[in-house]
Length: 586
Image 1: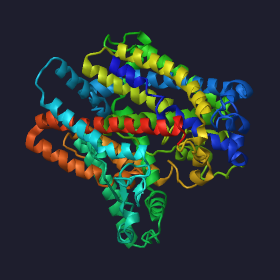
Image 2 (image 1 turned 90 degrees about the vertical axis):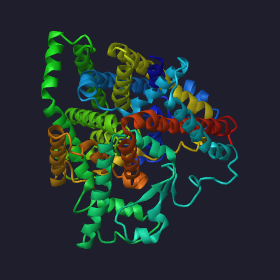
Image 3 (image 1 turned 135 degrees about the vertical axis):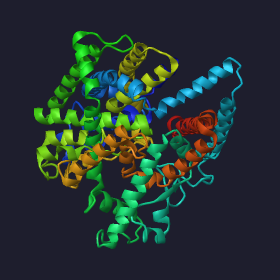
Image 4 (image 1 turned 90 degrees about the horizontal axis):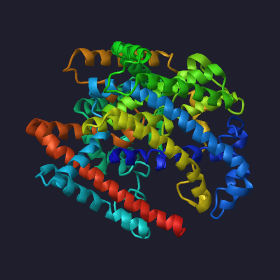
């Protein structure tokens, strides 16, 4: 229970928690107000003057006195949004718990971190454990690996030991990833997609806890679909200019392969997301029908949280979210469709994460195409309500870079349902911890975030200047995709269904739709080209030679040791940077 409670406490308080959402909307008031400001209501972000009051150190007076009347509605709105979103997706967590954890027995790789607690218990009981020794050794090695980063953070005048921050051709936002495409013109001129090599052991350790079939599915998608297939098509006259080397040629390749003829991989992937949800429901329709029946008859099994409560939460959360969207200027139909898109993306990504430990760079603009048409005008001609909800399902509400109340409420609760199952904790206890912790967390973290920004000077921090996330839902992005109703989108739905049915019918079938969809992600070749392949080979050899015993007693503790050690190192680096930038203003 303590393990779960401490985890819930981090849901909204970490960098990618609540911080990212308002941080991505500031520029709409202070830099791009003439372009997108009309589509962002003032209860989501106050005036430019009120925002500037948060920019520099010593402006705490502005929050509590000068601009309090503008900031209070914003803070209350975010708290309301988080609470209704928590109710909606925790309701779905109640409904999905038994299916995903007890019936399908999805692995939930993140929940396997519970092995650390189990190793601690063996130490407390003084039981001999090879796994504990391996975990400690690898944890120490992982921590030692980050010592050069600690030194560099304290004294940035020293050399960047690994080259991750200042070295040429390293991706600064993808730790330790060396961009082979940009580094070597020969590679850029001969390989269709962006490729690179990862030098951070953490990435390999993280992938080691992913199932073999998912690693293989990622590998087939990355190399077969995003690299080899475009390579073959380029020989037949497609993708003109694909092999022209420029300092940013990776972005050119990305645009052609994922958004251009003939593959439109982005639209195909969006179709697969729809297919995953549809066929999950079709294959398990009896299960969902049973939960509805038991909710109405109040005969939920004693081992579960009440299905009646689950569906009540879903209804209350849905009404609350639709009402919030409509208050933000969104038409009723668009608000309902937007909620359905949020539901679909969140459930599918939670399912992918529960199996393959990752989520996608998914955006939802293509799902509005059947309703809005093939093109939309650029802002400020883009209808305000449509720009708001279109952007909301692309980046700052649900999408990439923001693990707000949608993702974390479902993914986090499902993870801890799994941990509770492993530890013998009743789901009701787990659910209470998650629900109470999430609501308290929202009430504390949201206002405290704004207070801290005012106190320490938000724009003085090097990570503060985010771009205007409304660009993600504007015409440039919306018009670039064909949509879910295109032949590519439909093909993705059908393909996901075929893979799901093959997996349900034949146990030996090696390719599964979750890892395959993940392998189609635009960032996989960029930040982890060879990682799934390398880890698949290593893990296959480990299991082939030593069986499950070697994997579970040595392999898993070693992987989590590296993860824990590097995470401890990252915490130390973060503490050093906080002292430098926040306290001393260096």
